[in-house]
Image (cartoon, rainbow, N blue to C red; front, side, top):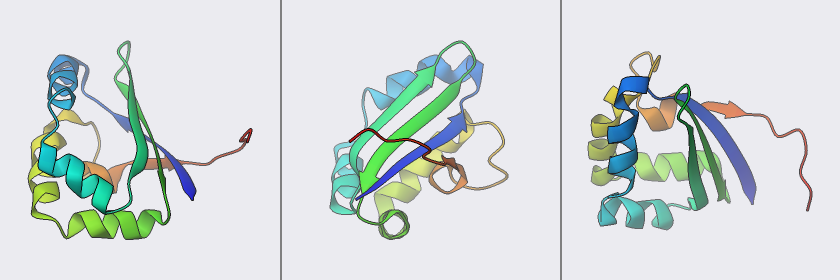
Length: 107
């Protein structure tokens, strides 16, 4: 199982709406994430500066991302969420995140 941690930057002025929307994630989006191998998935937001840290576990990150890319719901969700982020350079949030290197893990 791959453990994946990533970072994105949420625009400070949009943080309340970003938080609200994640309190109401579409059921079909949740189903798609589960079906494509996104498990133990969490998002953490530093409300002082908008840093967003994501963590997930998956058998294969590339396969999980490719699986999501094939779903209609992911395209709609990524289009809705793109406005919340800084510096994606035209990429969808799920393709534009910075994956962080794991340097320690206590099992």
